Amino acid sequence: MLQNAWKNLIMKDRSLNHSQSIVVVIGLGLALYILGDWLTALGSHYPTGWVGYAPLRTGNVFGGFHPWLRLIIWLLLIAVWVRSSTALLSTRSSEQHQDLES
Image (cartoon, rainbow, N blue to C red):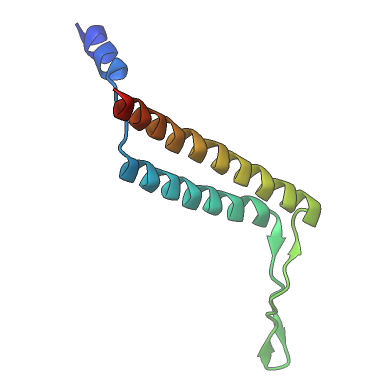
């Protein structure tokens, strides 16, 4: 009985309308941005300490990945976002075109 209820839950058509798809695409973009920011910051650190009476804090980050590897990480995350966004938004638009033709 529980297995049939689970199959019914999975097999239901849970399509999103256009507005919901846009919200999912934006949320996915923000999540991938946070993930990319965290991934590219792994192993890096700001210089800290005190010099005289002033704290040693600059905008330069030391350590972490090489710049070319950071670029590859960002390009891969952007490609994942673009591919998933086009998949989410194109399925809905093709369904709408079929409804209009009928």
